[in-house]
Image (cartoon, rainbow, N blue to C red; front, side):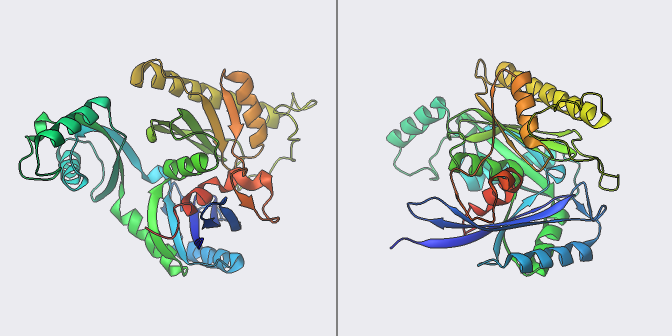
Length: 362
């Protein structure tokens, strides 16, 4: 019998709370069964820090009530402003022993400006050297990967490890707020991992492809490069695509073109052009760094745009004109979407949908 299960993804940012429920079935596309977003007043969350806990809890409770999810199990994303991501080369050890090595590294060798850091990590694939070494070792020994007869750790090949570090008090605060709103937090992860899950599950890029995801917000853009089934580079770039929430909004600009006719002389259009140019420049810098400093002659084949910045389709067209690379907006082709979920809204809900794809397990 085909199994059906529901899971929630929750994004809490400075601007809004977003909730998405996904039903995952064997042998069929995931279904986005529910989704909703609620704007937050200015100052409720600032740079990822909860400033008005009671207001955030009340808003989240209202969002959950309005959404009416089939489950209370939720995966939560931690704002990028609270997370430091480090890429280390360490001995290729079993995860339990590798965790101890990372703890030592963070305590003694890494400049981590946190009193109580909380971290998690993931190995980023195996090199051919590692695969060859493991094959020879298993062939020569009979006591297993974690047995007492292994050679000294220093003799092992090195592996690439991604480590995500956040203040422990912030992690606990987010978990408490989620619980206070009546949800059960199953996991807390970083934004790039949820976007990678969404992109590969939706078929926007293959797991083995090299691609960049730009999650474009009103004031901040998260850039993440994925290669060999793992996150390799991440950057947070402050670029403003919308006025502050306290400012008087400009009249809505046409979205049929990145720079609509008749708007060239307006301050709003000039700012939009400038923001697109700045974003293209930052993406180009990151692509060059990746290709010539990290992975020699490995180009980034595609840029995928997500986020809730206004005129995201215009931003995509502008980047296509300014960069010599395929640019694509995230879409819901790999999902079943309810009639209440317009296709145009999908990029803004990419993070909570990607979180919910984890399913109802930790």
